[in-house]
Image 1: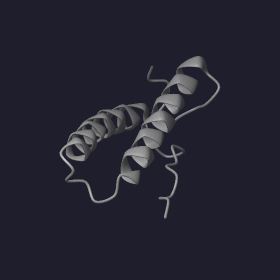
Image 2: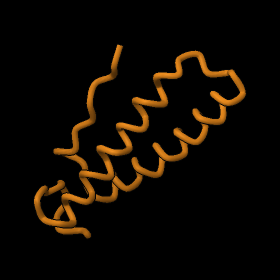
Image 3: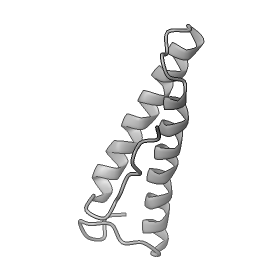
Length: 75
């Protein structure tokens, strides 16, 4: 069953950037474990990849000015 989508309404730019780094590391580990056939649920790769894309889209939209993240005007 799919996980809930992430929301960025109350996250600051720094928190979103930290989340991007965490998701990249998690995606690397999931891909590695999948290659070694040690991953129980391969769909977690898809969900992690999509969460990463959502985070990166939120940062891009904030920098373009179409979306405001909490915490001011950190760019």
